[in-house]
Length: 379
Image (tube, rainbow, N blue to C red; front, side, top):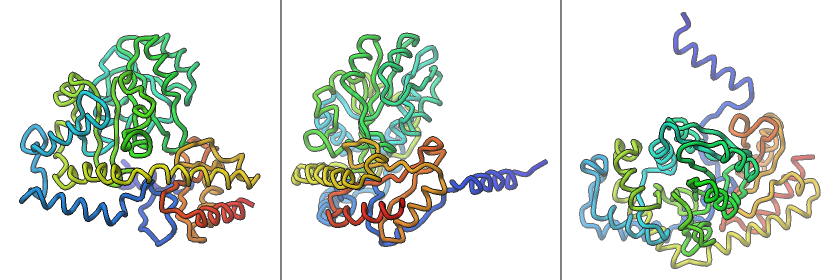
């Protein structure tokens, strides 16, 4: 009988042979075009000092939370932060989670029940798919941003129906048609679960997301906001009704059975939003960089047609093929640009791409040089 070490080694060898073996790497001093630090807050020294000063004001806080929120890990600060976040996101209540992954798996594993239906965009994040898999509800994918396919599946759905979509998709950088999707949900009595991971901090008043910017937040059953991307810190929250939040406290296993975030993380969340409130110029600066990038890319005929249309800081250049995509990425890295390849099975075979992330700290000269080198690498 094959032992477990041999079994695991064979699976790793198969992945390596397919050209998509993952491995950890350290930062190498290249120009950042790969991180989710869109506003530069993760590296912002002023915010770093602000968090430290605010944390110091809390007296003698514990180094850790000591337990789950339901045991010993709750605090007055956590309760007040959730009240503040609910106000920011224009919701009745908010509940903090340790990460966006935890929040996504929590809501989809806990709320939909046996006999219910989950309809999800085929491009949603792995954490949302994992949550749906853990649910006892039926689950079906609809074609990306395809309202006709969604409606076709809504007509066949049974029980309570949950539609899952994202404000900005992490691999393509495009957005779901929120208003039209809500119209369909209301037509068929479905409930929208809306992930704002890549729009938190970038749209809306003080970064409260795309749904709030569009004034549609009251029509959405649940919204998930993450703080480890544009906000530069860590953690996440779910915003919704009092009933939903009470239900999650009672039934969401990723909330019930995990040690809570330490106080320093909670302070960091609030201070990051305070910092953004004092620096409202940051999101417009980022959107200006996106516009500049797209204008420059369109000047290179060989590049323009390969980019997926996106108004977000995520710009995806489809190359196709793991080896070819890795080769182009390696050339870009050798030129000093930290651009990462996105390979199958993370994306579909034939849709392998470079995922270029833009930031407020990327200069126009760096963006221009990136596109020049990219054009050369693709020839």
